[in-house]
Image (cartoon, rainbow, N blue to C red; front, side, top):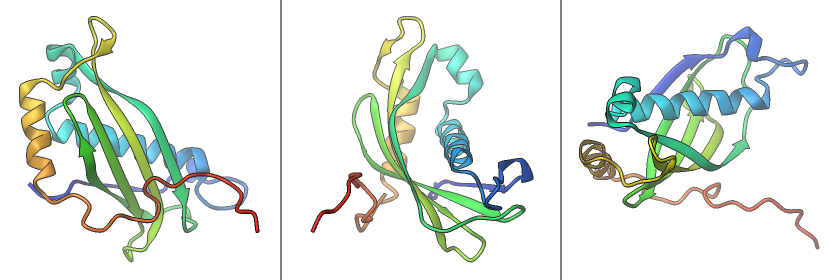
Length: 155
């Protein structure tokens, strides 16, 4: 298993009046990358149905680092920062075709039992896949964007 990468191309409907990808569309791409990564770990639509288990987003934070234009190929690289029995703390880098970071995404995900609507531990097969993914080494050097707080710096 290698670090998961989600690839797509900036669609014209994602571009706003400033001629770059709209901020809402970054969330779409990161959400799609999350779903694809979870499917890679074994939690695809069929498994969600069969296991009666899914993952919800509890919180996220996007930082915009570089404009992205229409038709640009982009890649989202998924790193698992931390996890426990039912939560995943994930950090993603969105890069362009030159591997330049264009945005980062930090997200806390929670495993949910769909029959009760309550948080629940990851099913065995999914937990094993998460353990395996964690063994890839995750984040070696903490990015400055990880855990970033919003605020105006006063002098």
